[in-house]
Image (cartoon, one colour):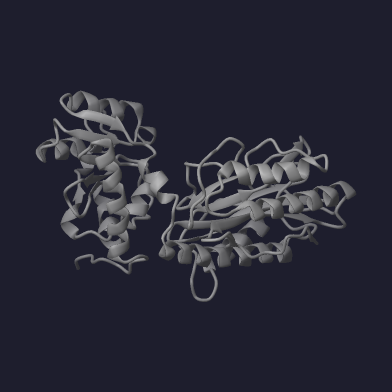
Length: 389
């Protein structure tokens, strides 16, 4: 039986629109081909979500060809045929003998493809940050006549502004996020193993809501007492206890798109300190949301938050958020003082207001938001409260 293209999360026209935006950027940078190796950028341009970036692979976008060419391992090429919007002949499998081969690998096949298609002396972009250093050097050595340009951030900045279709998928992810956060309020109890609670949350994130399952898994950060002063601890080999605080961060995932949220839980009555920090942070959150509108900057949003909490004696050292979409974090702009990136409709951010104050104390709250034509839409929908268990 021959594998066929499966159901597509986005229509062909959506992928061609994204590629057209990228080709305009390629023209501006005077390159004729771009080799995309960052896995989330490949997802954005093709619909491919399989996990295979641990071995050499690359999407070759040619300025004068409608569809890109995806060169990857044979066992993964089958998934690409099924998931990608391109025609079958645009999926090229390199020999399995090149895996873990110290002399020649899949990047050599990509370089051969570029040379065979008349690009050995043209402008070629690579994503140097997602390539092993020796692979980036290989492109330069084997294509000495080409102008090799680092285009690490080219696709990521295009991803910053979402289409309406992408926004709908993120709303679906946000509904899953909300269901998991509500489930946490049901399963966090004294004596319950953190791993058992995490398993219930993962089950919710996978089952999804309204017949739309989660189609990927994002890591759950579950920082419980005494580790609330840190941010990225997962569930421990321990149980919840009376008086514990739990800082929870998670995200639903639909077709690679994440909608993240953070909330704080307390087993028993929250301390007076926690209540005070919560009230100040919520006020700061509301001030930040009020500052979101087209024409404002990332810095404006961050400073609205900082001004509000600092008036009440609280400070936050880390940034206030970042763009979110495919793969959770999109590495481009930051919601921080001095980032003058202009807000535009359909930019999406994780307004991340976690505040790690002392080694043994921190608090978290966040929302996934969209910049609208006139202000802001909060995509996530969970009460802004300390969940008392």
